[in-house]
Length: 202
Ligand code: DC
Image (cartoon, rainbow, N blue to C red; front, side, top):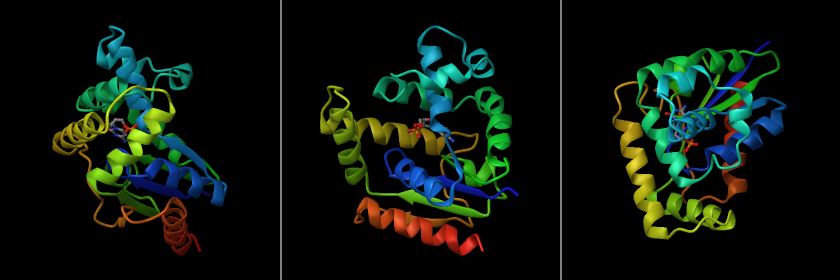
């Protein structure tokens, strides 16, 4: 039987960490759908046409080691506005979600568009400053040179674009539980997410 957990939220809200922990706790598969858009964005930076890049996406594309950088993130947010790109990625995400044994998908439109039927929905958020602080620490640890100010601007620009686009914008599903992780430790946020999913999983 399939059981779908949809976790949406803005950049660096903690949804990735929470999703991985929820998947490990329940033994579910996990798909970071942002990676699909990043992989398309990366191919477009390499000169491909967005629609072709999305339709031609392969498993190897998701393993590229430069998918996490800020340039690829911006390119991902830009290709994510294109209806044709989003349409090309729907079937893969839905097939992943409905696999036997349960799945956690995190992204921007999982609870609203990809899996409106998900049994558990979370919208993970945090203040801009908290999110920027987390992303800055993460980028520094990866050896990427940047400044806290640049990271904050970058996040705000991406969130504005992701929220304003016509197709599948970033927003909480009406039946999602909102989890603001601003004042929470990772352990607290993970515990709150697991408690919510457990309540739906009986
Ligand atoms: O989650 P992320 O930061 O890796 O996502 C990168 C970009 O991809 C994000 O700015 C918008 C886009 N995206 C999307 O439009 N829909 C999703 N389900 C996931 C990501």
